Image (cartoon, rainbow over all chains, first blue to last red; front, side, top):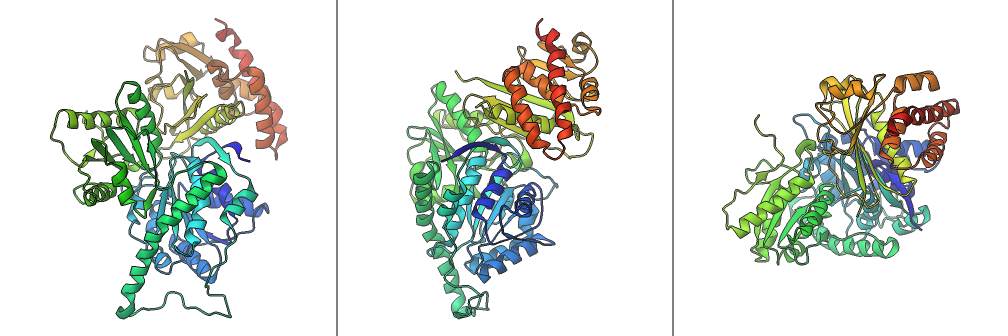
Length: 395
Length: 195
């Protein structure tokens, strides 16, 4: 039975970690994810879980220790944010290429500079080509639900890839909201026991982890890694379906909110999706046919599914909470139009950058974007791509 | 129609405005409401102005932005009236509560022409009498409940007793003082609320 509770996003993830009770958790604190290892340490000190917690001296070490523990055959995880993730860079690639199914709970925070502790997606997006599966949450409930699904996805024999479970720093990590919590036994049953097929501390069946590969074999390793990422799509769908059957909630690659007859769709990730949904309801009351496509799974990128979902709309606003500094838009602004083009879906697509370094994203801003899309289509207006919303105006 | 109340808290770092917002979310949750309680972080340091927010609703809350047109503003530190535009966006049919020893009529001229309801609570006096120390957040929490009427007094007192028993499990000696601060605040506001 689900239990009604109220928790912050960090509390919800720490609670899920206690329920999963992984074997090893090395961690180094960084705002706004610090509370997660702090709460886990408290659970351990109180005897409520028996995870081996390893305090380390940096994120380079926390990811290294997580990689080592996972390779040894232990279910392992860590937590971080922002510059902490940047400092794990080398090991993120080591984890994925060694096909280690570890889990990282990322509380999204901007990267320097200016130095700032608030939310955007530049940390997670910066790691988008490291070979990790990435799942984003709208609220504390999804942060909790996604974490529970992470281990079964990562450890599936068809996948064997690390999973990054992301939530928005402060906006959900530090906001207390209603949540449905599942019973320990149900969560444990859903996640299951970890029985790695091959691991270092297995005297009867020795393996090497991370050896040099000559050029005659390296490319095949990388091809196989990409095949695993492609296969992970079916596993993510299966696990989402299993979760929905057991607990009655959730989506696979994305949520489509009132998009069935929508002329204008906003494609967005994370906590701002809830704000956008409110804008959709407000505008629907005024007769505007609008909807939201909330992307949950960013890696693997569900390109064909997105193209199909956007096939019938007149225009889409592609919302990046991240700047790529490439002169033409953020990561979604590059990947969504490529997905549309491959499927010959020629809907108008406008890219927006919003919410950098904690800049607030409001219902009013979302409504303004929908009005712009309508103006572009109805009045055949020429428009500038790569637009910023929410910038200060000169006084 | 859904009913949603939006509250904005102004305090200084270290005074417990964030804690009060989280406690309000907590106690409203126990009555079955949908709640949000969250802080807005600037450069955190003791004494710097901070803001915290509550949304309390009978429907699921999906919006994740700050609050710009609150129904209620709670000012935990009177000196903020000089430096922060505390009534910005505050609804004309809403209300503001200020922690001060002055009367509402003396505070209104400092509120940039705000025409809605103004309440004052002397949280310092209440806190020192009830607790022996100055912790303004319990009185201001009680004031927020009394003015917003998000829940009735008896339910609030009952739920807060349970909350304090949990929160102060290791120092039960402060529970009675905090409970006294809550009821003293309701009593102190009675004359202003009945007008």
